[in-house]
Image 1 (cartoon, rainbow, N blue to C red):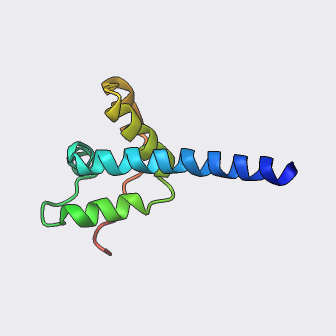
Image 2: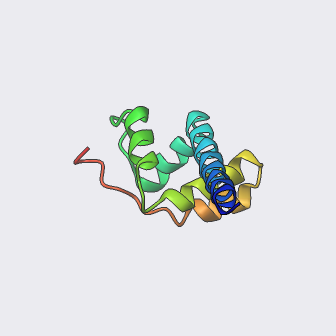
Amino acid sequence: MQRFLFLLLLFAAWGATAAAFDSLTYALNQQTLVKDLRAQCEIKASVPDEQVKKVFISSEVNHNALSAAAAALKEGKQAQYQQLLNTVRCPEFNSH
C-alpha cells in the first residue's frame, strides 16, 4: 500500500512538472514569450530564437516564473503574465 501511495505521489508530481513544461514549451513556440523576453532582456536580434528558447528552458533560476507566466499566457491572463514576466532574471547571451 505504501509503495502504491509513493508511486501515486511520484506520478502526480511528474504530471505537474510535465504540465508546467508543456505550458512553457507552448508559450515559447507561440513566439509571444520569446518576443517579450527579447524586449525585456534586450536580447540582440542576431541571437537566434532557438538559442533564446534553449537558454530560458534550461534556466533553473527562472523556471518557476517562466512556467507560471507561460500558464498565465496560455489561459489569457495578460496582467498576471506581465507581472510574472517582470520577475524574470535576464541571462547573459554573450557567452552562449
